Length: 409
Image (cartoon, rainbow, N blue to C red):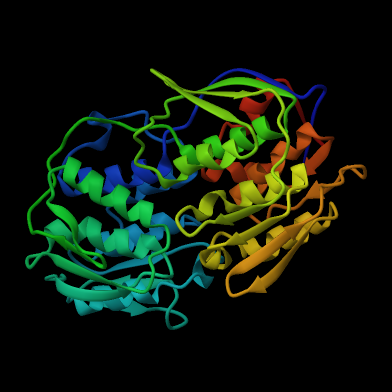
């Protein structure tokens, strides 16, 4: 358990952010399919646990692959292994075995792949092998996970008949699909939207190119939340771009509602905050950016801003049920998050830290980091702080560098 506090509410300095694990994992798979050694072509690769798992599995010649709790890795590897000879088994952590995989498996089967559930129907683990998918046209539910769609797109150039992907329903996390397509084109694979709900990938191959991975906007969201809870902030976050591949760059716009200013510079962004009235209320939709929903929910709680939160459908099947986890932990500080209809919740109350709350993390890295900014308002505890290894391994060290007291207890 970690006890977290800060003697003042000032944030000043500069931070070199982690490389984006979303970009890193896509680049690793594409370069591997191109037959290239990824480390020779990539710089500023993420050091997140998920990316280390991705690297290890892509380099592994064994017949059994364990993705642990890395959802992106499991989904991408499901498609990747369909292109490999022989039979393979793909498994993961106990939580991974509870996360649905059927939409991706159904689509791969329709394209000619051979996959078998080794446990509960519709869930990992999987046996993959036998028949190589040829490709063609396929329809996939788009309202469950964008990672299913990206997994299919990533192998599209290596399907004999290419890929025509029809999306059924409103896509969640659409910016991640656009990230996948932009990166595919960067590495030489023709892939683009041909209709509002259809993507076409032509058969071909990836070509190795050098890429510096941009910094992680999801990681930046925690620093934006801290800025909005501070008395004054002058903080440079290095490695972020204005023309980002990442949908979570929308955090700059969302944080502006709290008075946090973003200035783009040659080597990153400068955050400035000198106090500002809290918004009277907010209506926030996270359909395109679910990974920053927890951050904004906690920020609203810290500032006492009533907020309607929507677009949260995918949160229940993440590393934990993030809706239930948020409701439980916010309740500890007197903040309510109540359903108000389909996929919408009303947040009300201001966080009361007078009892020095200890927040559970549920094995979820984003729970730990989303609640950490509340330490600017008073001492808090974070259970199992090591969960940040999944996406931001040096998060606590960065906090210490900016004057936070982080002590095990």
